[in-house]
Length: 398
Image (cartoon, one colour):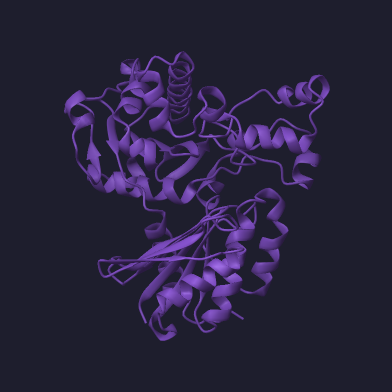
């Protein structure tokens, strides 16, 4: 009984991975296009891949399908770890799930209506399928609970903000926590001694200022809409834009939310949400795509500078996630003009075809610029295993 099953639900997907005691993946896969045409499950185990193409109406059906395909016995599971996007102010660390925790998670649904319900569904189905196995919720917001009030509080009437839980929560915390620890290991320095900026750049994107392994600021806020330019999300925008669109364009709140969340960002600027396509269009002479790339990198660069100031200096700048790990042009452009902060990129190191944590700054650089592949599933398993190990008497999931 040493394996940990990790469930990581998106708005229309479920990623899953079964890890043994050493952290190696035993099996895993992806349920995708849930509730859409062409839904399917891709399961991988022992070097083999099996694809199950069938209608998957909702996340609960997706979980049941993957459990059936996985076929892993209950007596070999130490825990099931669930990535939950929003833990609000209550959940600031990995938490063993019981009925009270589930009820509290349901109350947090308005803060993450696209993601929390998918994660909660996984807990319900996993409790049915593995009734004797501890269920552990690991929160994307938890890493950022260490932010001081100057970073997490908005300048709103205090009583109103406190009543409705309006504050900067931050997201991608599981990823930022993982890469901070891995960056310290790569540099062979104690995490507690390091000041770093972590850049999680994927379809969703965020920056985090990390001091001594603790988040002290981050770009996302009450929701994952704030901060950097993303695939379809606008990032930082004057709140007055909402009122202007309502008054002048006659758009209702729901339509404005959809605009800022699903039709803005790179998609709104360049007509494509995938940065690879934006690069292709820019290389072909598309001026809108070129401008989108410039704006995308500029906003990231501004956050690096701001967080260097907040931290009082930098030891490391870390790139992670799909774009951060695989786009050397973006990495170079983000770091361009930051030499006064000790940040520079070695062109050969930056474009080298390597995997795993690596340094892309020159050997004599004052700030280590790193690429560290993220692994949210491993981090969830790490936290779930640690929690269960320290609470042997609380293994009931009732």
